[in-house]
Structures are given as C-alpha cells and as structure tokens.
Length: 110
Length: 110
Image (cartoon, rainbow over all chains, first blue to last red; front, side, top):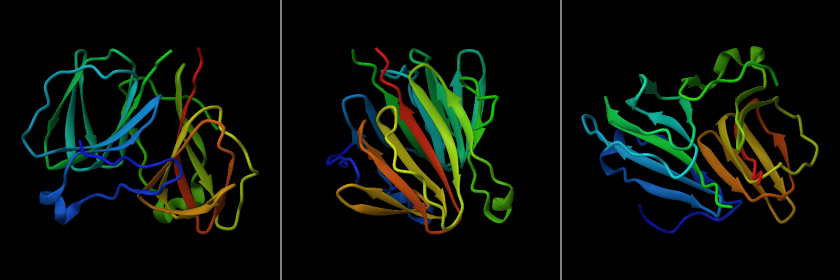
C-alpha cells in the first residue's frame, strides 16, 4: 500500500493491467474519514489469510478470477463481478488467475 | 431504479452493456443500512440535474464518457475511471457518449 492517495474530485485510473500485470502493485487509492478504496493485486495461486474488514465492504474484480471463501459458501468472482459483504463477515481470497480487485471499505466511525 | 437488490455475498455482474446499450436500465444493485450501490445509465447528450448525494460517493465509469460538472472544475470520466466526492459536494453529470456509471453512496446514518 503506497502513498499518495487521491484527492476528492481527482480522476483515478483503475484500468486492468493486462499484459503489464507483472508490474502491478497494490495501492490505496482513496483514504477518507468514512471510506477507503484500494486496488489489491493477487497473483495466481496466492491466498490471503482469512480476515475481517474494518467495516462493510464491496469487492469488485477488475481482472482475473478469484475464489472468495466465505464461511457458508465460496463464490467465484470474475472480471466485472461485484460483491457486497456486511461488516464482520470474515473471508479469504484465493487467486485462480493473476487478479486485480477494487475494494471499497466503509469505515463506520461514530 | 428497480428491485430486487442483491443480498450480501451475491455475485453481481457489472459488465458494460456494449452493443446491448439500447436495452440498458438504471438499477439499484445494493441497498444496505450504510451503503447503496447503483448502476446509472445516461444516454449521450443527456445531463442530470445538479444534485448532492446523501453522503460521500464514488463514481466509476463502466463504459462511455461523461463530464462530471463540479462547482470548481469539470472532469471527464472515461471507462475505468473512478472519482470520489465528499458528502455535500454538489455535481451534475453530462453524458458525452452512451454511458454506464457505478455509483456507491455512503449513508452516514448515526
């Protein structure tokens, strides 16, 4: 996760890396008081530890294919698929191909 | 905006309509207590009224090209562009081509 983040109103390119995937890096795109958006790179065969996001989350597959492992059922996300998980919904992600995810976390700070 | 919405964990297809754009319809994809995600269709030449979202918002261009008109400056969003606007940031959107937007609204209900 690298800085700098992008300011409100700034246009952010979230294009697939495609043939340039080898140079792809995970990056925090937006970090504001109630929201964080980051681009998450997961190479084919890699699996994240099981984790729980800091709030409700949407996960969008920009490229590749991942298995989203939930306690009750696994789901496959391909490019142009989106899923919502409520706060506290533990999950892990396994990359079935070189994959880029766009992850939006809602931080419910009171 | 049509129902039903999608449940947590359900995989949602947000692919561009492409050649099927003529049959595209705006749709609420996710409606939860702190987040709404909807797909917004705007045909070339159409402009939304100026409005302010109910909370902070991210706007992602899935296909087409729009002009995001902000008080201080206009921005052009093309496919695979993303922008964040803070709560209360008034804006309007003009479609420069047949366009689909993915709009995520954070509802800061206390």
